[in-house]
Length: 135
Image (tube, rainbow, N blue to C red):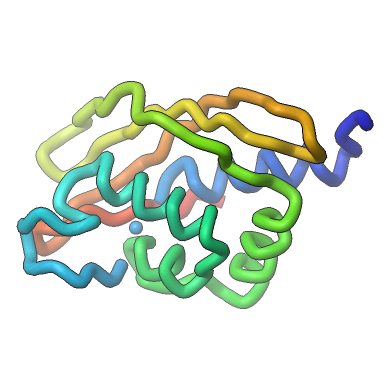
């Protein structure tokens, strides 16, 4: 089955929404928690997407929230796309407080495997890394 334009736009939306994202951490500031490095916050976001946990995803964004449309979009996307696995390919520090994390995502979309690259933009605030939303 060939992906429809809607599915392609959903995939693009995932990459755009995720490709610059960051909130709540259960660990102390600057510690070894999910927001202690640029790659860890991206890994936490992808894990939350895989587990269909919109509140966790929202907490990883700098403003700590998603509007209802964004949350609904991510949940719908998670029913269509499975992230089979991923790897962090490279972390490029733009400054001491900003970085880009390049990843390779191995997706399953309607039983078809597809490798895609996504770059997530992250920022550091109060010794924690957060995803930036770029819609």
